[in-house]
Figure 1 (cartoon, rainbow, N blue to C red):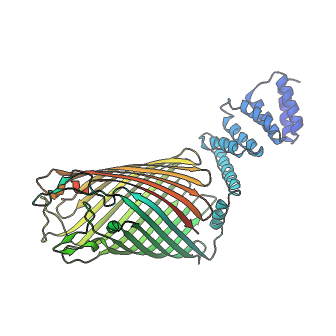
Figure 2 (figure 1 turned 90 degrees about the vertical axis):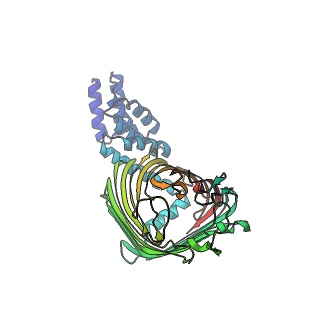
Figure 3 (figure 1 turned 120 degrees about the vertical axis):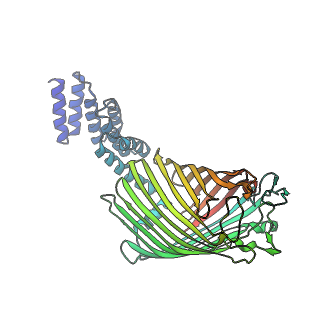
Length: 509
């Protein structure tokens, strides 16, 4: 028999599930002079079917050089590695088969294989077991609890400028020497959500959230602040596993209360106007409805959101209140180019209409006879994310904002924001996140210190944030955060540097 005849007979035996006999013919074809990638590929698959995984790997590796067989070979190397008990190698080959663009069918098979391996690995981790169990089981009522207590350090508690400056907003133009202080604080947060799943795809909920930060030194009590929020509404979610289509609708009515001290950032002391302490000026009650809609297909998704709120601030006779109406409407669309990358375009319009604050004249002066202040915002931007591995992805974001002062345009500005983020899951228990942004403001009309003799106002901000989370048990996690913020402006009153470090525990049910 010739080499080709041995090869054809081996293929016939393979189709009849006679793998050992087929392997004998493949070897005879090789000994007769055949040394092709297809022969190595068929030999490797036959060894795999005969459960000879070491020899199957050796034969399949020889078939990788053929472009027409590379994708199928990668997929079969994944099957062989998983059958041999090496899940990590199997994932490596399946990811190569998944991310290629030549054969979509094999890419789909590889995605399914990766999902099954991940699901199998989760069986060894009690944290993942419980999380997956709760996701699959939809009880009539669900209660979610989450609490966090931390210990942190703040390098600039009152966001004080780092150097002395002349206050050009004061007619006497005094020299101000800020006092930059640091100290220890305790951030706390608590949230609870009770959902009644009265319909197959829809549930009604009531939720409560509390957050606050409390400084240990009595001299820094003015920096304490806390917030409470109560919400109730419904959530709708329906997903078709076969087509990948999903629809989500979230609607809620929220009521929130916020308390903080309106302190002087130069020294942290209370502000006094006409011998009246105005500590409560920034305290407010906020309430209004929210609506979010999202429709997803296999590669395309789109959605919108709406928010309407009334902000009622503490009434003080000596200064105007910050009471205002807030409306926001946003749209977005997202396209997934591949299983590992997507691009999102978004835009929104919003407005803030104040009831007691007045707009400024173009020379920066504030007159009680001026019209009420109103700011309109237009935002648009783009977000792109790329997954490098199953555990590592990064994203970049650009956003442009235009704010229009509807009185005379004194406080108009444009803002360009550039951001990035990286997320790395190291194993099943450890997550590492980094995010940062840089924002550049352009004020075409406003003056520094609102003084027409000063130059036009400039403002730049930069922020970096690092979060590390370690899940110790099913309910308890250890969390570390580091944040740096820098704000630079020729209006020195609002210029400061600040960094914070926080270590705490997070409990969730």
